[in-house]
Image: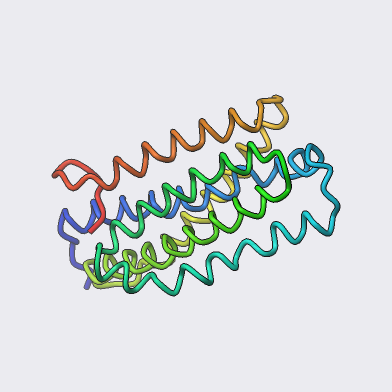
Length: 193
């Protein structure tokens, strides 16, 4: 027998779904622009591959601190604020005048994304407990929708010849406003638990 979840659980689910959506969109939004960025830097395939491939080292390093940070600041804050930082790192990638900045941008994005990933999955499990049934797959489904949407947006921006910097700035503003809204703890917001 399925019971109706409390209103707090529904709001928390919507907030968590939006967080997964935003997280999926962030990286994917600039992936279609990688060839342009690589060409503007005249980077070799090897160096470009290293810049992209070594980014997850940041995630490995900072991800180890996730449990301590969540214990101190709460999982909501560890889900929201590192996601904002990861999104803001898009501008470093967009403005990279040297391949070294691509390394920095990818390491920062991966580092902050690792914190968000751990915290938002924890949030998803907390919401699932409120529902008393398995709903975790819906969160990961929304991440996939976000990744596809981000890739499509990035492709459209490339097709329309929107500058990479303009695209990154708009992405940062839109995603940051979404995150700030869902993090507000007032009664009418789709806030996290």
